[in-house]
Image (tube, rainbow, N blue to C red; front, side, top):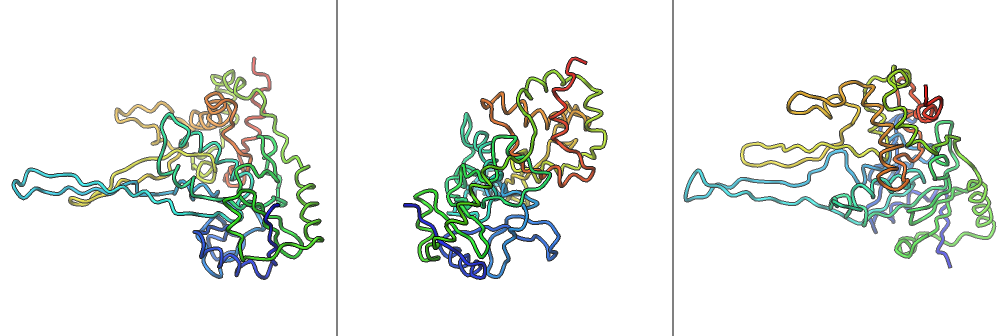
Length: 353
């Protein structure tokens, strides 16, 4: 029998406070003191309001792949026998505490299937991401607040998709019904609330059924990889698609499946640390080589690479997996309103021109 609890709207904060004593807790919340401002996932603090009214501006990617993280610390230690001799001491900074993301969206959790293939499924395994992934649970909200920028159904997902989720949250008229979908999540619900009554159960079931029938977005991605290859050398097409682009990189920073990063060593005297930081394929310096050569010197080539990565390179390398979850963040956040759906939708039009 499924384990379910009902949380009244006015009791949500107290329940989250109890939950935070069991596990490290992240919630969607305002990033600034402005109700219309950006939102993102942040560590829970008592009194911090949960932002369930719309999709977060920033994805939950940073929970597993922090924007800046210390991979290791190092120190050169001089030997007393000789000033020119020294040893190198290295401290691994891996940390993977049990964590729950409460209020994830189906598209965000689905996006992790792309990151998993890159960081955890070989041939090289990233221990930092992989350990966080194994220790992180997701309580996912059945999504009733889709908008014109969403297209999750076009890339294999859906607003009620619970693939990869450990708990399901259904928002009802007077609260939330939270259901454990896996055994490891059941103990989290102990002593947090009572089982929902029959009327609330019925309402939640009707919501899930109605949302499950929705198709969000009408982008046809079938054959996009082949169409991209045909379009690759058609400069006029890419100029038309990307002429407005500013190369600001915001599309990659808000994207839950973009994973470009840089590694730098920051040192002072004999001590230092190795940092991994988000980077962007939309930046000129990302592909700039030490020789001065840049294989992608223009925004046309950089944006073409971004589209190809998501809808051609990843599907071909990972057996049909798309590098896009249809969250629509890149469309909402683009300052010049470039719509990736139009770019992909036009790929198959007149490819012989």
